[in-house]
Length: 552
Image 1 (tube, rainbow, N blue to C red):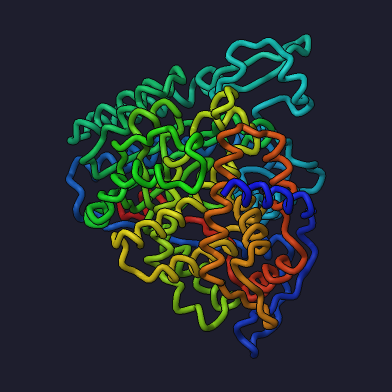
Image 2 (image 1 turned 135 degrees about the vertical axis):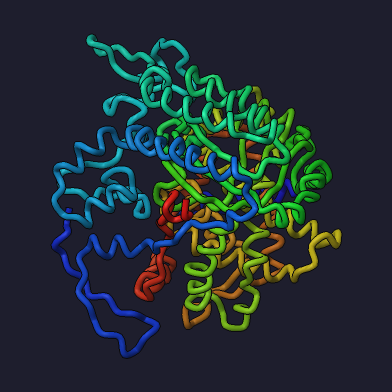
């Protein structure tokens, strides 16, 4: 495969506020549709479809029903913290906006930049979004940061600010948000008194403490040790996607979850295959020497509340945590499939996309089971590959900086499909592998619409262009796409090798060139994506959620 890798790299080098503006919108699925005039902001809001987040609460105990509103209240407080991290004082911004549709869009985006349009500003007078969001001074350069002497400058849990003399210094999250995290901490302690599962009780107690000092590892281990809990909450500063300057600062978010015990039982066996699949990765031995933790859970949940980072722009439909590399190597990770949110996106977005862009002969291969499996093994695949560079450059995340998230998401996507292929070969998956491949192709169209400001969107742009170059699919004259199954398997193995080499080498410059060469949307693809908008197919979802929606 090494010669193939070199050849691919060689080929890569050659790749080189307006609320009063009206637009005419036509429903492409209805020839008799009446033309309607919409403002640009109404068109923006139409990128999202509203979904109610509900779940069957009948299996919950009395204590669990009492605990659920407390967890939702705690998670809800992540919204304000993330808004500050993403923009600053969003409430002050909202006071300057009279148009109600624009106000709604600010709330969806946690600021004045459109997350589904590469962070394009949509409020008059607002400039480009700083790459470092509100984690750093807006006038700070990379060189200034790298040359500055600051306490815990590499921590993912602090802000960088200037003092009165302009010198850079850090402020820990628990100091910046002292009042807010104390309130969240108290709520988690209150919930812990109702916990009947000892693992959940311990986790809530330790997470409560971690919010007060930004020492999260103990609570991460406790979260990994939970096995039998029905309720779950993921809360705190977690993902680093929002920091597009260095990809280092973690942003606050919260999920409240109810485990689907029946579905989880069906999934529990797959994590045991990780060591064997690691050994079989299509890459040189030195890039797969790490042993993935086998104490990993793979479960299905109904998510009943999103807040903060995970609720901004494109919404998460599966979780793979914790991100702490030490915890991952010792314990593995937990993979949470958000089944109800996943089903909503499949029904309201993926199926309609397939009608427009997938060849009619292959539409039968678009199935929810394949979508669920592809998403599930994406999360499992985060545990494969390598976490620490083999070149002495530290962790992959620190070596690749702002490119780390997009490359990691791309790795998980492609190795997820690799896992599906391998498990089919072992007879562990019985469905038609073609279902996974065609659904995977439709999923590229779904996710590439998130734009380059999303790590997932960028990863899908890269994969579309790479697969196109490898002949994994072709475009028909009518604008539909058809998968070449044999070539897709080869492209999958080749791209896996490319990404794993970049990660293992910690090749920051090489990854930057790779993203530049493959991470853009060509004019033809953009026209096809525009057809999805013309057909009124939403890009993502917004949620009706909370205690009232759940009937509590």
